Length: 457
Ligand code: ATP
Ligand code: MG
Image (cartoon, rainbow, N blue to C red; front, side, top):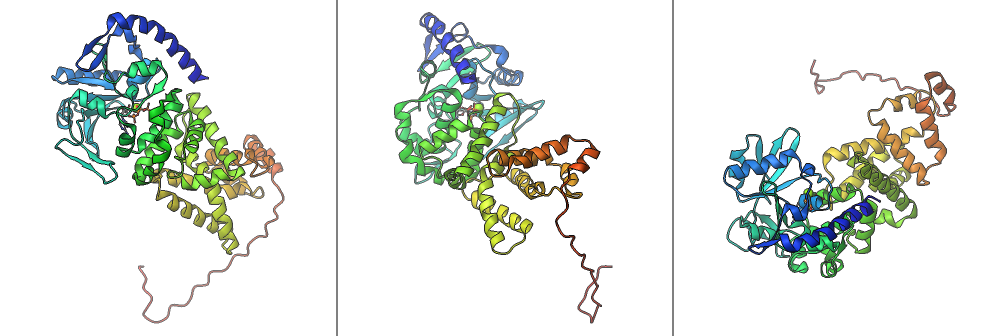
């Protein structure tokens, strides 16, 4: 719905703009110059941190533009979620201008400028990677290191899509458009700059970006940009797992995950990414579960709520964990140790393709680890579950399992009621304790013999 609304707003604006464009625009080098009167960017949508960064750089005598997705979003009249700045200052020069800044990255060195809790990413114009400098290309054509600085015009050629190669100077309020990005946006097209095959070979992640941005922005991938994707899908195998993770996280949290996953599958791009997910999506119950989870995440994001990536990745891999858990149980391992073995196995297998950050895997394991505890509804155990720090995530996860048909809905409803009930009512809800009480083994200390036992006391 939001997409439709944006399109409506955008299309409406387009007609008015095109009329003014004729009179207002002129050429700057190879770029079209679009004035404030023509583009009508609402400056209130720009963060003051981004404005201050541009002003700081320009006062120090450098060029500075807001660039990339932020300009594209501003032209579509919605608030960018992050701002990137491009400048002719080197990372060291940027670092000297801003007291609270740091140089980051190896493959692509840039500067983070901090304002309160907002971070603005500042990168130096990049040049052609064949030029002399600090660049490195793999045999497949993939660019491994890219620190060759260049001119504004060269920087624009290196960006992925025409709509992402727009430069907005917030001081004079002009947009520079080197590759007809504004016209493509008006035509609802996502078009690769240059030869798409070469550009995908340089960086296969651009295939994922095409799918993600087209779903997120409601843009159609232009025919030539689209054509080579299916054939080149295997190139993704060559991309470092941590980069894939970052891009997939963006995709899952874009508010259009269901659509994006559908598009990835249609273009056979999913094989190299989430091989385990691939298997899951082929089982009806697994697919239902994953799609429900993605739909929930989309709804939350589009409603402006946050979504926890650990929860999402826990759902994506759950049916594989379930399968491995069954195998370990069948081999005679006890319920809980078997679950832990399954969790570790699946996370390790996944890490080879797409490395889920450790900070997320710890929470994923907690969510999974809680699941058997929801099936125990007698004695003191349910009370302990309610006090678990991850109870809410574990419970939401349980509800999804019920909704997908993996568990009876009655179990999820019981937990909803149990959490809502007063202390006394909770006791009446408990099921009879059928689990035989374990007899405690008495831990008899062996007598210490000889000199081979060492104590630290
Ligand atoms: P989003 O709104 O989802 O952040 P974005 O286009 O801003 O989308 P970023 O990852 O923030 O995506 O990248 C910022 C800009 O950097 C892009 O708009 C594009 O100009 C450039 N860029 C990013 N990734 C690539 C890439 N793989 N190849 C070429 N240019 C890229
Ligand atoms: Mg961005």
